[in-house]
Image (tube, rainbow, N blue to C red; front, side, top):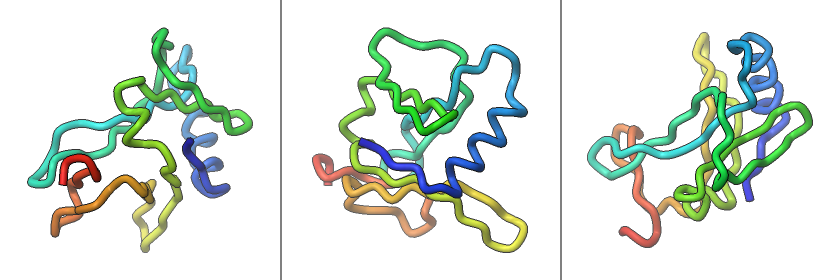
Length: 111
């Protein structure tokens, strides 16, 4: 379904240790954005919805809402460090077009 690299997993584990009490894991989703259509969202998950898909990577739980499951299937999440910037990068095989600024993307079924 989704893969976390070792670096991404360690990064999320460290963030979860600093998260508010009651945090269950990390919620990954999508939102409307930019000129191409979508952007990823990453938030602490403090609730579990009945329709959530839950992926476990040792101590990291990833929550994905049913509505985003298909678009995120096969995604590899990696940690990228460039200078002083650290970001999670998504390599999603379902994305067919990214805008020039890299802020948004389209999926295969929308291109």
